[in-house]
Each structure stands twice: as C-alpha cells, then as structure tokens.
Image (tube, rainbow, N blue to C red; front, top):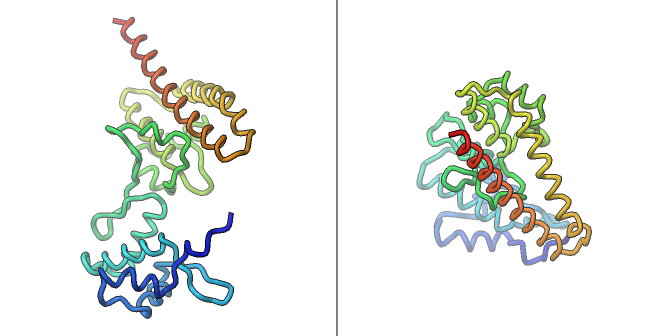
Length: 237
C-alpha cells in the first residue's frame, strides 16, 4: 500500500521540529548524522530526503544521547542497533545489551499472543540471556521447542529457554518437555480451526477479528491449562 505524501517530512521540516529542543541543530548536522549511518531517510526520485516520524524520533534519541549523556557516536550507533533488534542498550560502556520482553507481573502478557516479535538475538545472546548451555539449546532445537526465525532467535525462544533453565534446577531435561510441544501444537491446531473461516474472508475487518479471536482463545487456553494442572496437583495431596 502506498504511503500518503504528507506522511513524510522534508529536511527543513525536521529541522523546525527539532530546533525547539536543540537550538544548535542545523541541516549540516542532520546530513552528517546520516553520513555516519545513524539515520537512513528515504529519497524521492529527484534525490530529496524524505523523513518519517520514526526518523525524527531516531534523531531525537541521538541528539539527547549526545547532549545529556555525552555519548560518542559509536556508542549511540551501537545502542540504536540494539534497539532495532528489540534489545535494551547496555547501561554501561562495554556492557552487553539485554533483551526486553512484554510482561505482566513477570509473565508474558496475554496481549502478546498473535503479535510478531521485534526481538532478534544471536545464538550467543540467547545463551547468555537465558542461562541454558549449548548442549541444552541443541536438544531444544532437535525436539522442536526452539527454532531460528530467519537468522535470529525471538522473544518466544528466550522465554522458552529461560523456563527450561529454571526447570533444569529440578532435574527436568529438554527431552522431558516434548509433551509440552505436542500439547501446544494441538492447541494451535484448534485455534487455527476457529480462525481459518475468518482469515479466508480477506477483508480488513475479518483479519482484525481473526487476530482478536486468536489472542482471546490463546489466553483462555493458558488459563485452562493452569487450572487443570492446579486441580491435578490438588488431587495429589
């Protein structure tokens, strides 16, 4: 779908929006930050820069980091790259960026069901952030509990790895968790049966309804699963 022309800002308009907070900002400085790879505005066929609101907020981040934190451009660029992959930039120079997950009281928020993850972790980042080792990760991948999304691991992989790491403290190994994957696949199949008629309608309204239904059933399935496990444990007492 084409983007309306006025969804873009010219370099002069960007300058005017920033000048109130950054009195020393100039067109030359914006061009310099572009040449350093901190922003990448699109170009019109005639070569004029066209900035999005995302470009504008990226510039604000760079200018604030320079002015308030005295960060060099190299560090600012590393922070931006971390944010682009869904990571929380390192709090100290030389530190490792940390993953950010959408949680509610430490648990994955139900609203996250059906949403694509912006988090992109390398293999080393997944291992260091989750606490599992290489052998455990190899097993989890072999059993289909964790998989690459393109060339990176997402927030779902991190959540699974962290849970496995904690369960390992009770002697539970990845091979014991295959039943969890099978149960999840069956639940996914059930949800797919419900939303498929909506997805086939192709309209925007039907797609939005399908996403809403998917989130709702997924959240309900988690509640049902928790209640069944809780009830089963009560019967063991």
